[in-house]
Length: 480
Image (cartoon, rainbow, N blue to C red):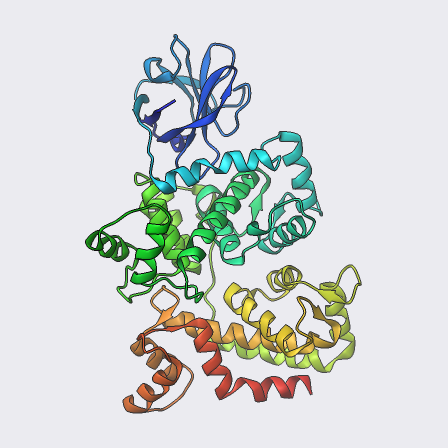
């Protein structure tokens, strides 16, 4: 099967069916199947009962979004009209919906997307009973929603148990999968719900595949790609570009022209290659926090989440929480109760996923994933350097959680939504922290942080700088 299908014309409910569908390597009811280029569970297949269906699952088509009568032939491009489910739940013919044949795309990354369903089928993640069982394991408390921490815990356990391959356990990829699921495929809240689970699994496979590609190109292993690495890496992947074409493509990714590309930017670039007709507003998850979800809601027409409001944080919030945590650290009874809540299974060690869950539930002010990762890494580095935080390291963990989150908040207030600080943004940080320095002094400080002279500072570099100035004394005082 060499032809793709394009569905267009649907408006209102289930407009998500508008997409380009590439031919799959499987058949259903002895007829070919197609899957949407957008990394989402959307399929065209034959129901076995004289219908072509568009649905989120390849089955008997009983719960599909749209269908048309199969009038012969091996694809629905010559069939019609299409019947769709409207807002009131009734099925009506929609004469605007068209299905046309188009050449299949041989782009390297389109083919990478086409490998997802085969991988998921290999690991039993398309069978309804298997998905149901896995969801129950993930949603162990049965409230039909799961957090990022619970998802991370599942991935870690499935990989450590040998059920899933090791390449599926990468935190940057998991964060991309989680954000796409809740912001694009879901309803825009902070939780993954049961009906979003299939999309989540698809996203986990997709972004981990992209992370593998990104890591292969990133020969400097600094989680950034420069033009030289991009040129060499794309060539090795079989994407042959001239020097001029390489520069042109690289500039498409490097939106701020800083000369380096981060993973999130690479993901947005690949989305545009794979599914160029999709709404560009869905790349707004490059923007973090409040403005991201606002952008998604404004352009998605999702009324289910329009009443949700994000409250802005301020320094006073951190000052108040600092006093509370300092008091808690001095109170052995409260400290023990909080540890017992974190270490709910009583094995005296906790994982990153368990720490994340505590931050989300008990301290929403401290719920910034980059800060959580820095706090976790510093705690285990200062401890016995295994992958767990032990009871004796708990005070240090609390101190690290607070200070790295406060640092991230300061960083996030001034950076231009690209997780990198320019010199002018760095100066704003110093002002926000109450530092009175001249422009020349600020440039000297900036040069100390920006050791490679690239003109930008990443969050990790900013953390190291900030900690060298004030945090160690404060955290030592807490622990003592």
